[in-house]
Amino acid sequence: MNALAKAFEQLPGISRGIYTPTDFEAVRRIVHQTAGIVLIPGKAMLVYSRLAPLVRNTGSGTFAAYVKRIEVDEAERRRAVCALTTNHTFFFREEHHFDHLARVVRPGLLRQANSGNPVRIWSAGCSSGEETWSIAMTVLGSDRSIGRRIVAQDVVLLATDLADHALAAARAARYRSDALDAVPPELRRLWIEEGGGDAIISDEARALVRFKTLNLLGDWPMRRSFDVIFCRNVMIYFDQPTKERLVHRFARQLVPGGHLYIGHSERVTGPANAMLTQVGPTIYQKGAA
Image 1 (cartoon, rainbow, N blue to C red):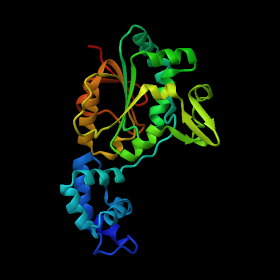
Image 2: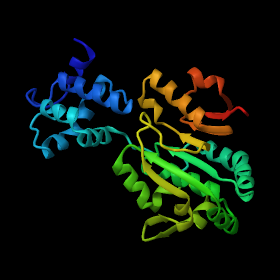
Image 3: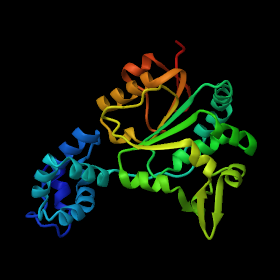
Image 4: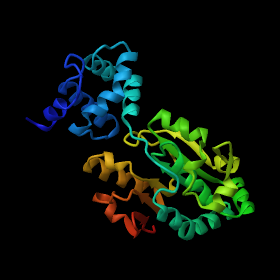
């Protein structure tokens, strides 16, 4: 018995008339082609639990019928892919990245902005916004007057994700106060408004950010290069060729001397190796022109 057959043997109470290994394989193929996500046989139950509501809501009746629908209906296919994405994140995750951003990178970005030049940062795969707001607060820093001057300059933080529900949460910029324990106290005091157990990201931090829906495997409409790119714990869902193509695209999208931050279990391999030098734990810098 292969791994997929074994996985289906362990699915409790699910009729084979509703959901079969063939359906899983079809969903796996579509999701990989659309978003680069690799679904292993052990994800058979996850696929069922995430897509069953969509099967019901569309009146498809069975997964086989739903598969036929998403093969031709682009909007529904996107809903299916979004339902299967994982959006687990938290503020100041992998704290050493934000320490490096603050100590090593931010001074140069401020000089650049003070000289009247644009500063561009990208949070790629921003999920529900915790990473994005952690970047924004780090860039604004612990001096309110400097932070407000940054907001008035040409400094933009682009935050993108494939999942509409994640982007909606990020845009709302509202979290439970107990989710903010990792935020440095001075940044929390300056750039977060709290009350009644809720926390709202300040207007200054929100002014830096532009949210956009983007599939990292698709076309990138951005015309400018970036000084900093964060793409963390996204590539763990991709196969190796997809990872290498994506990192190479990130490297090409960076300005000379720009920095790329990736997840703790991710590595730079393939063509990007010739363009990026590791300067810290999962921190890479593009060579000068």
